[in-house]
Length: 209
Length: 209
Length: 209
Image (spheres, rainbow over the protein chains, first blue to last red):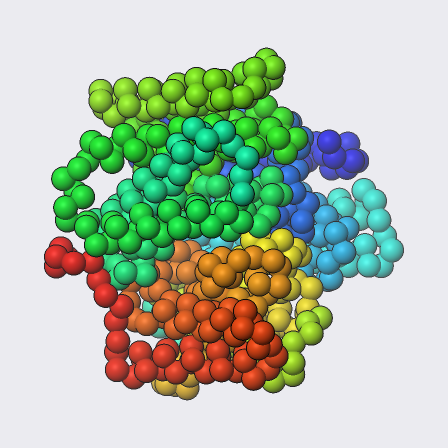
């Protein structure tokens, strides 16, 4: 069981469910899958980033296997997506909002756990971002898509920002829930601005594509 | 070296060789590879699931690197497949049977090792299935196929069943070889029924494909 | 921080930068990516093999996260490739030479670290090769290419040779820089001969392609 403050834990649970839902829906749309595939890809989307982080900071077995609530929420999100995929396709914006909550919370908790494991500033920021984007990256690779985080939208950049604010506040001696919520809000705001205005990260110069 | 009973160890070795053979043959059929690619993909198919499991239960270096016999069998299976791929293509049914032995043994041993590492029921069942299907999933991803376990056939479901029977019997206090063999037989039977009758897991509702 | 001799450390740093540069250039050529994608794939190419090795020999957090210089060099290589990709495309041969230095150094250091972690001859050779080719393999998978190491060129074979010479000399009681440099030179020479003469590893018999 984790020792996060209740509000952060609630956000973490929300994010886990939302990632599983959204991950499974993406899988249903992109590939011909059976129930095992849909649910497995939902769970991988929800839990993969945190598992990668835990393996890399030597916190194994990963939290996803130690606290049954993460596994249950991920399984639930995948099953709901399998059963209701046609209906959920109409709910793009609410799902985007939930997904952004997941991205923000995962990045902040990931960076904080990496610092707690004794890692430096740079690795902690990277591990925060990996916690946020790792699950979707594994999912995209498994369904043979170039991970969307590598090619479009502001997705990795808000995660890096949220992780950087986390690392900055903790290094400034500001611990606890308020600092974490500022970091979550930073990532969430930048991500939603990106969705709303269709912002893109810069592409390589020269118009080679 | 492992401490499994001789019969279970024999099945484990058989499965390792069969997975390497079948994995390398799949790679030869699906992609233009050289000898390094064929043998590497055979070895990854045979050893990848167990390595994933060992990393996730913190049993590192993985068994595949501690007991030379696994490495030797996987290398041998890959080399045999490279040399005899044309001839082996005619032996689909015997290879399917050997592959089902591997799937069953890997799922049962994987679930049992996960329980032994202190994991709960849900994670142990999932880790059993990962042990069985993880290697083939990595192989398919490397040769740019959507992993067949995600989209067709009964493959993950028998592995989950075998792992669940393992976890159930151990939790009921029934240890040892007979319980393991019942679990192996469960997975093997369901897998072979699936092959024989062409059974499929359910797809998402709505005929969207 | 690492304790390698200065010359080997210099080669290791050169290889890290060259892998990031080359990895990011490959990514720019092969897929439509933004700056995050290009830099991330460069860093994954440079650091992925060593991270895989460290996870598998239980040396976690990986060296790439403990010594900031690796992260800085990988980030720098990725950024340079992003900014100068058009100009760098003309420098194929110098980049091939730098890349071969990276392959050689990574294979030798990887095999040596695996032996130091108590692994046997076979696993140490494999882990040396994984250190050399692992990062590029992850990159290729993420941009949906069949990893080039599996299908063409002499790339894995020189890495296996360099790792084998390392393991052989250490087992013969020859430690230290001279032995490491002989191993590096072996891998480098075979790799450059392969590039120069367009050598290929054998393909499966029967002309099935």
